[in-house]
Length: 614
Image (cartoon, rainbow, N blue to C red; front, side, top):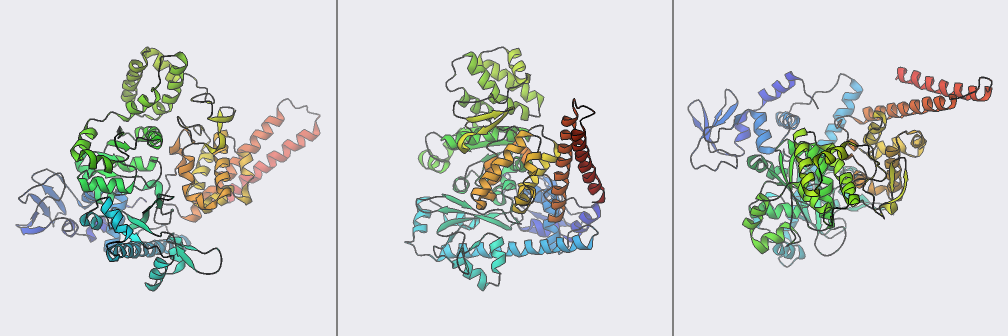
């Protein structure tokens, strides 16, 4: 949300920088202001050199030279964006966020905000329940044995508020009910699930080590649960809710954002335990995706804190695929990604236990650029054959298309020329020549059919190389419809559900149509998979960033209106194309055809009139 300047000023005036900074370091009166030790983690000092002026509402460190106001402090220390900082400070001061001058929208907005506040309170209550449950279980309980096995110390458990979800089916359900929260709210927060038969609910998380997902402002947004014994899924994550957007959240930033800024580098690891273990070992500038592939939104989130990224992946096939998927997303965000796999251990925790944290730090310091690491994977069996050169260029091309910096493109082109032993002019020509998308990167088992450059996955396989479905270049209305449909279950039903299935036959771009068909197939098989739909589809497309909407602050009614507008635009284009095709080479005496064209044009005009009324 964008806030008017007068609102920002009001929020700033209602808060005191001294109070905010006092949460992180001790400040004492000194002359006209306050002094204390610098709270930033890269400046470990023994004497106070951090000055805060209450009258001017600014801070300055005479040692590390950091300075700023209340917003820059929350950004640099907690990793908040400017809008997040404004919302956080407005909430602390009891100031309502501004809304448009529309009574109905105001009422809806206020209801939504009240629901979010209640849900955040419920999540905090749930987090406390899990945390206290972990403290109370007996020493011989399996969860205590697991914690001992993973060598988690009490300080780490406390800092990350790690807990335990009891094995009983209704432990949390009964607790939140006793605390006065409704079952409807707990169900919408995806903490409990209604029974298929009879009345009542059962807990979503049971017999798992629990990791609360905490925002930069300290609010509990969601949870991740790690199974103690063997079983699937190994990690169970909260589905999306009104307060939690998986693709826009990185686990651990409440604890690690200040370290990422201080180190000017973010180490991306695959799971909660990886992050917690590394943090405990002293590698604190870490973050983890929410059990999904890295997304464009998460890459932008990292960009707010640093330009430098190290992707620390497992050495298995899943880790290699994660490296390939992450590369274009990170480059598109203007980041400088490096990559590291650990073949001598199954995960970072095991590596640290075997070889020590200093050995891992050394590997991180000396790891190659992610581009070179991925290129080495693609060239594993390279023999310099002409067909291999073409296939590698087809794999590399979408990576180059994602890079906004021409200088970096030029240097990577030189690297390709050197590695592949081909001329630089040939590399440049291959990167700009027309591409047969149906053939690019195709392996013998990757495709079942191809139609006008659009590949259809065989047996729902995840591609091992470059993405297979091209959605680049699709009309704006079709891309926007896809973005909105993937934001929520209600949007998906409205866009391409049973009442609007004909729209699929009217979408002009084959890539967008293929993605919608794939989404419908997964959704029909199991509608509970909707929350994972985007993370599943991201495997199949050439431009994953096009699947995510930038309009995250829209209310439900506005999204419905936008979906309706998109459908009308698509229908108008479809009718126009149909009339144009029918009119080509038509005989003036062919009255039947002329009538059909007239009907199509009338339908299109009718849609235009509806647009104007709306």
